[in-house]
Image (cartoon, rainbow, N blue to C red):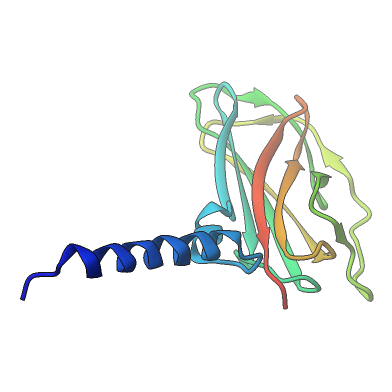
Length: 158
C-alpha cells in the first residue's frame, strides 16, 4: 500500500526532530566515538614518523590510560635524534594526573642517531581528570628536533 503524503510528512518531521535531539545530547554517541583519535601516526620530520596510541581508546573520567609513542626512521639515512626514554611531555586541554602509588622512571633522554628502520618507544601512565567531552592532547617524545603530535581524545562519563 503506497504511503500518502499526509502520513509521510509527519514521519519525516519526527525523524528530523529525533536527529536534532540526539545531536544536542551531551551523552557520548557513536558519532563521538568516530571523532576520537586513539591511534595516530604522523610524519613529524623528513624520514621520521611518530605513532601515538592511547589505551583504552575511549577512556572514562577517573580511568587510567597508557599513552605510548613510537618514533620510527622510515627514511634511507640515519637521523640525529634526542628523545625521551622515560615518559612523555604532554600539553593540551585534556587534564591528566599521575595515579597514586605509581613510581616514575628517573631517566630523561637519550641522544645519538636512529638508523633506517629503527624505532624508539616511550610510554606514560596517567589518570583522566577531565569530565566527559572532547579534548586536544599534544604529545612530545622527540626533544631534538623538538616534535609534537596532536590528537583529539573523547572522554566518556563513568
